Image: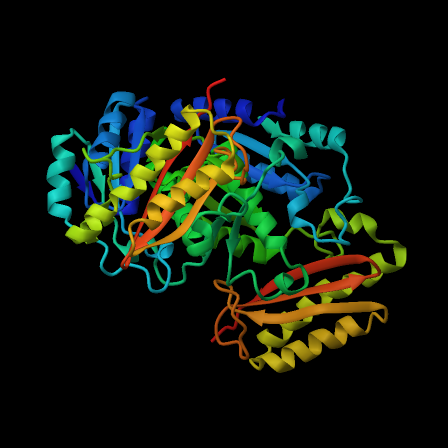
Amino acid sequence: MRIIEKISEMQQQSEAWRRDGRKIMLVPTMGYFHDGHLDLMRKARSLGDISVVSIFVNPTQFGVGEDFDRYPRDVDRDFRLASNEGVDVVFLPSSQEMYPEGFQTYVEVSEVTKPLCGKSRPGHFKGVATVVVKLFCIVKPHAAIFGEKDFQQLVTIQRMVQDLNMDVEIVAHPIVREPDGLAMSSRNKYLGAVDRERALLLSRSLHEARRLISSGERNGEEVLRRVREILDSGGDMKIDYVELCRPDDLKEVSSIGSPTLLALAAYLGHTRLIDNCMLIPKE
Amino acid sequence: MRIIEKISEMQQQSEAWRRDGRKIMLVPTMGYFHDGHLDLMRKARSLGDISVVSIFVNPTQFGVGEDFDRYPRDVDRDFRLASNEGVDVVFLPSSQEMYPEGFQTYVEVSEVTKPLCGKSRPGHFKGVATVVVKLFCIVKPHAAIFGEKDFQQLVTIQRMVQDLNMDVEIVAHPIVREPDGLAMSSRNKYLGAVDRERALLLSRSLHEARRLISSGERNGEEVLRRVREILDSGGDMKIDYVELCRPDDLKEVSSIGSPTLLALAAYLGHTRLIDNCMLIPKE
């Protein structure tokens, strides 16, 4: 496994692979790998010839007061894990390499970034869209894999790639969960024992929503009420949002007549967790 | 010469050329060709294997009340002229093809787009940056050629390509002028006989500024005063701006100690013309 830190070196390598007709897969990450990341790497290997994993804790997608400084990092461990998965290249640029002095170009996706996390994290998706365009121009992948846990990010990237005519296939990967149901996240490391237990309410509330739908419930308000009730039973948990929306454009919906995204975010102390699931009404 | 209207067809063709190791040159235009455009095409042919000219009057770079609707168009004539220059492909997408319903992604370059034309044409460079990213993703050129008449556009694109790590070389081409000095522009067509004569004051004022510099003048205020004096002698001409700035970041300068851009814009009736030159102090 090769570790590349320079943009120009990565571009030259990718250009050579493309000329050779190799299919390049990219898994963009902020590192501190968990099994969700490793799953994305396995999918990359299965779908292409060359798998590149980028590790970059992107400063422009963190807001003031967010956890950029304390975001967990362990690149040596990440290298070992990626190497075990047969990854070909880890692209590990510095902030200086990605955002040199005078940097002033940003990519914004306007509509799909407004609801959900966009409300409480202004500027977040602008940072995400910008760094993803940069990574696509540097790694030149044929396809890139994104996890569905960051569902709004996935929709944003899909919209951006379509709008800017980027010739990159976006592959979605299902949420990977701990055995007890908690969606995997590098931020789970922040949780103390009590909050780790409380965090189970997120996936449990989604489970209950799916149960309601399968037992015939179609009223959005009723589903949201029940989800909030479960989250509120955690006492100290602060709900950021619980919403039902169309999975393609994230427009809010009030009744569940077709596949509908149920997305939520909550704070446990200083730790903000997100989770989501698709509600699929039968008949 | 082939005419391609579909984005997917253009991308497939370009991808095939790239795999064959052909060097693709792009000349992005809004059509209604003059000798300046033809010069760009000749340069494209001389620098690469494949020359693609795009013709697209980009609605997102026109402001409310600007001349999008009446911008001169004559694609049949353009096809003949491009064909005569040995152009390989004219890429001619529709607005619907470029901006389908739901389009919502924009690219913004923040600093270099603020002065000069950015002041009087808010949103213009956002439209330019966005469409150029799209064209680069569609045509996949190794290099693209831009005329120096739109100097701020050139600086904006250079900055954007650098910031987003787009692997496209930006080639600048000098302003092409009519025999009497008027910078070529598709908008010159708007000028009646009186305004066409008056328009000569733009290039004459630049000429006078260069004369002042070569005779030792280094005081920016003095140069600007003299340029404005010449433009004002046209009576009905309304100056939009006359400015001196650093050619790399377009920051205003007050004295001319190194190569300095002198840029101006003026209205003759409803027609807005721009021109510029480099002032290069010797010793």
